Image: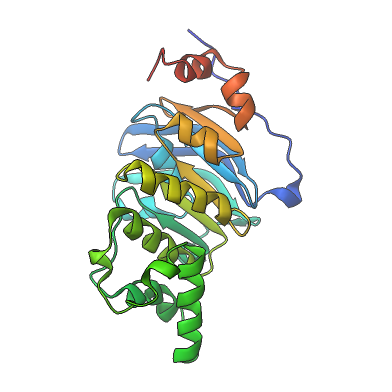
Length: 267
């Protein structure tokens, strides 16, 4: 039986180099205590991977970062999560505006039943980001370029997004998420429904995106976490067991549970 760390893994980070700061976060589903005392700092322009066995809480915690858990009636979040020093659970914070700043890409590609253009234009229209058609065109093109799919779709922008391949659909969803110019991009197992070639394309895109965004990715693939992230957090049974540089997590884990997961003895 291992002693649970009192403050998870301490990371010494300059306060100016913290995009999201979570302290003593607890998540309950009714009477079930799903997330326990999570403390973590997400740095800007960095890919942070959340790894751990199925059901360990990594996706639940990810959904706390843009208040997606608000949509679940029995879910209750306690503790503090700050984005640039502002409490995102403050009653004055509009969750819709928050999700424009903290975008999300889901496990299964979920393009809207609209054209490729309208998929990407949807968020900017809602948030009034364009004064005219020319500005909207520019936003859409920029997002599709950043989503690494512009060259494949530029001649069929008015074709349905659902007609694209799985990998293209996921890159379209990434373009849709970044069209509102978020500061943070959350990705919940974005490659689990993709083939190896599409996975490699999305992983390459994730590496490019970190020049402009803080990226947080939940992945069931330790190899993927090792390839794309600079920081890795290991979750187990609702606890954040260890959080450190990815290279250190995979070569010199400090907690026996992390080592057991990395080597395949638990999971």
